[in-house]
Length: 448
Image (cartoon, rainbow, N blue to C red; front, side, top):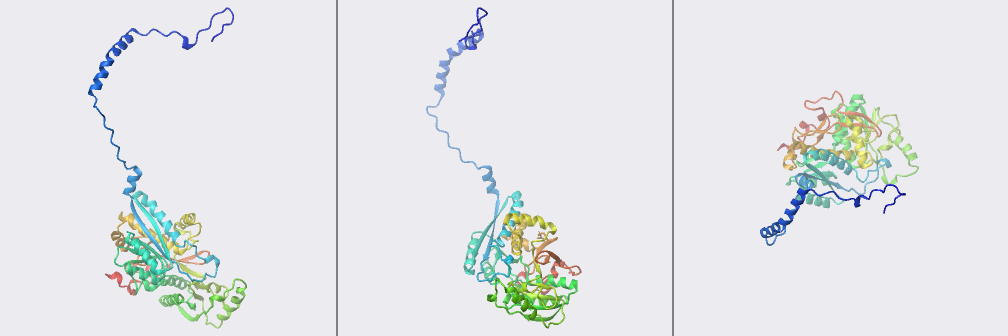
């Protein structure tokens, strides 16, 4: 409705009420023709159409880009087998209690590193973990995975279990990476063709310490040995290293201890009196070497000896494949990545497991294959090498499967030095001055 204001001019009507313009004459004729022809066109269309149009067939499910890409990805499974060793006494220090994922976290980091490169090469690495306190059940579980197609196993187990496992799998296309056992017999008389060792041997650790002692000219040693079997094996490695590098053990003493008598409070007073008394009457010496692989008494010796001498061996200054304080050669970035993944610092077992898994990844990258018949011989060959945050490439010894690598010499808080030391030369590589060299080796499995 519209209103007028007085007798003035009337307002225009709304748009909807405005008169329409005249339809063009030509357009009217075309519309008329279309109306006349419409029935005949409809009839013709009806005559030519089929009586019944069949339903369109359902489209086959096409592969999505993700599914097609997944089919092209080469999946490489790696197994970590852990023997849960019960009944062990805890170490003296609460700081040395191993975390539940010791070793596993290192393997997980290596899987992530492998996949970083594998993503561009259409390779995917997957980690499985089996754990058992019964060696027989552990071996059975590993065998099931091998029969299902897994070819690479990182082993954290005793020397006895590792030997049984390697013999069980000797006729299968699989390789075991020993990440924890330092026993020399695994690399020598009891060596196996299907076993590689990322864990350094006792002789490698002892040689690393002995080279530094020789460089410092601390030549006269007192050796303190624990009663455990592994303590005696470490002492054998120390004796060999001393002889090899011109050092002298002036006296050996066995430290008998009763682990059950350790006290949570007040124990330090007893130790403060016991250790000096035990260390009296020794010949003149430069250092005290402690052989205590179980970490059950060795930490008592620094600062408690009768005369003021450095303590080395398994306590005080020690040799190790990895140290959480190392910053050289990209170590800081490596450590930070591990802390983000695990929420803790990297331990030696983590590093040994990382090296094993990365060895598979490096071989797969170089050979563009997952076939164990291709990768296992390649890892044995001189062409294989791995960057391992130690300043130089690491490789496997052709005569016993041991990973040759620099060994860190450190205290609990900081890196002191790295062996091989300056001046210790070798005709092929200075790394072979650590541990059993080819002419000394008693391993025969790799000679075929």
